Image (cartoon, rainbow, N blue to C red; front, side, top):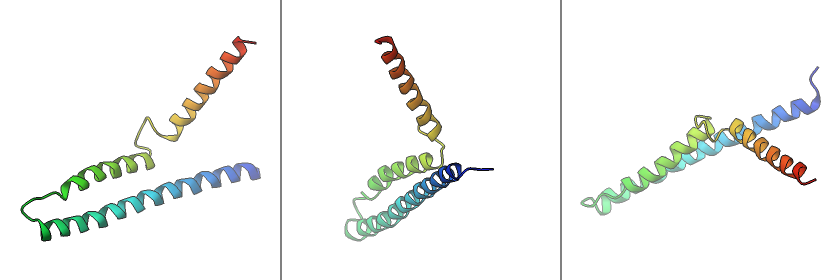
Length: 101
């Protein structure tokens, strides 16, 4: 039988995952709306000098990286990598402390 602690851990992980996905969709929505406004402003007030694509490009790159992180497509920055690095540093610290005792 599953303990309450295991259920709580699974619940917290699921809740954090939903929070991360919600943050990504908020970022994506803001990106689309703001860049449409930039496009409108650029085409109406200075159509001979197109600048709207600069924020579109750089913010878009950020949105792509955000999405890759949220959906665990980054092999370096996913949760397992974080756990492995934390364990590695804890082991190093433990061995250093044992060496000096």
